[in-house]
Image 1: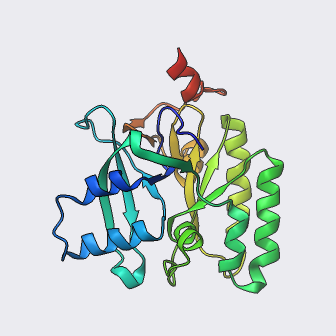
Image 2: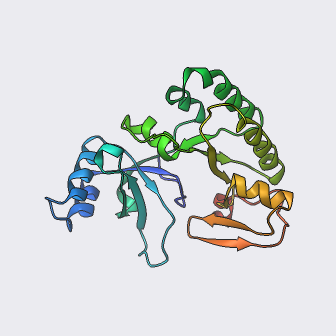
Length: 234
């Protein structure tokens, strides 16, 4: 898949060999980080686009790699050349998390995924569950949240999805549901914080963007936000 413009948080990328060499050139070959990155490269696993610091040069991209439990459970942060990205992708669809849940939860989980889809949201699973699905390595532990990335088009859709998630959170033995609502203009808000804000329980909310974050105190939210792509084209 060709690279989207511009890059956004939670996009997954793979790199070509020269890009990996550039990333690794300054690391000591005997270091734990170097060894883990070489193993990651050999398996052709993706890296995830993180929030971008302001000091990056043009053409650079900050990405992250969360190591599995057996590798030390550490998060590595790297600066890579965006032009050497071979492919771009997304986290697995939420329904695939069924394979990591107890059999007793399978039907309830699939029902939730179908209800989200009925509200025009194809949720993705990231965090520990997402990375375990991608790599097959151990990430999920007792108490791990099940993180959902929820692309939405408007505030009304976000409200309806949050209602579904709140109801689903009452299912016995289901991992704690967490994650973000992702609007077309790149604004991302934790769905639990959105619920508190919209209900009036909180008077402000944190909004994350690929290139920063901000706190919004007033309760106005445009019903339809412009997409990042249309803003970029303009």
